[in-house]
Length: 262
Length: 295
Ligand SMILES: Nc1ncnc2c1ncn2[C@@H]1O[C@H](COP(=O)(O)OP(=O)(O)OP(=O)(O)O)[C@@H](O)[C@H]1O
Ligand SMILES: [Mg+2]
Image 1: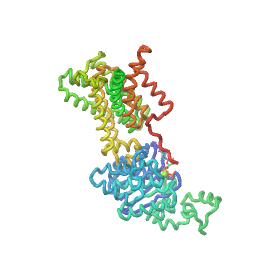
Image 2: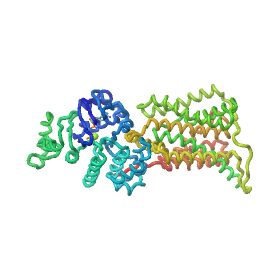
Image 3: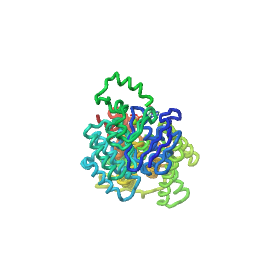
Image 4: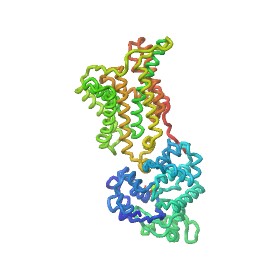
């Protein structure tokens, strides 16, 4: 349903950040995108949702297709209307609005009578939000805020979620809860997901297929189970050696020099 | 005693108009970060247009009022779509300077079109007054000001708090990019914001010139409204609705009791002295947003 073909992304016409990548998300699939800081994960999501246009960035080569339609020139509101909801890095809630108002903003673009049942659906997935619905969103905990932005995106009746580091800065127990809910949403609503994570273990457990990004290039892709078995991934992203123990910092450095060709 | 009450009521009526104009000013600031220095000029431009519709063209009052409000709406649309649209991606300061330049441009047009004399506005309300319990004397136009601005503010509050467009405006003012990402057409929100802002300016213009006469100096009301907005807190609409009348009252009281002591001028000075004091002690205004900080 989503295809990126040989996509190159530049900021300010010159800074080449994504160097020709191809990637695909099938209907109902959960795909993860892994990579170190600055690899270009967020940039790829922005290129898909159109937020790139607000940062003086552009898809300078290749194209992005969604359900047979080219979308890389579209504004964010248009990709949202097409069914792509981007849950941005850093929990971008409307901090002065209440939780419920935040959720309702997600339904503005549809404007028909199903808003109420959509709201109930969000509260069913996130019972915690129901109990704080009148609270000002800016004062919620990080985990609750993450639930608000996912719920807000769900209100837009998406076909595809773009999730940028939903685990960032959230306690492990809550991370598990949120990913369990995302799993349920994927299963019950049939929403496909492209999830960016630095936490490779969570991402690979959660997804069906994975891509590994380095310096704006895809260096490895495959079914998530296969990627988990890859020795380099084990070492570099999962922090495990062949023996299943942590490597020392010295080995790590040595490895990072070697990993270039991967 | 009688006098002081009269001043308070008169100040209250004028202050409501400050609130009205300040709402337009603040909406634009909230949604886009632009301080619109042309707000006062737009107020008086609408008043001139109203003058032309009624006195010069002889259009019946009610229709002329509606036409003027429609002109205000059109002006807002044109400013956003054809002027500000070109400046997208430019630093916000450039846009603010542009509003200053635009204000001067409009003043030039008004000088050409309507001259520099003080024109007398068409009479909106019957002359005369009523005295309540022998204490307060209210003339009809003051009462009308109070009632009309009260209603306009209520209508606006309902629109802002109960409609989808209002919600879209609030979301956009909180986080423009996030608003776009959930499917809100942010460009459209900006246009609507400018239209509403210019309609409130038109309503303010029609009302205020009814007591002040129509001339370019009335544009100063833009600065009074700005002072109200800053004292209330730039993002707080309830704050502005409270501070506007308070400012009007203070202004009239200083005109009555301080001006005789210092040969005049206090009426225009006091609001800005208050502004200064408030900004020193509470830079974000009395009801302004404190940035929500969670660590
Ligand atoms: N607006 C911008 N203008 C110029 N360069 C940018 C811009 N945004 C990102 N970059 C650069 O693009 C590269 C990739 O950034 P991106 O945010 O996509 O990385 P990321 O993989 O999401 O990293 P992280 O894990 O830290 O979030 C970085 O080198 C960054 O400096
Ligand atoms: Mg990122």
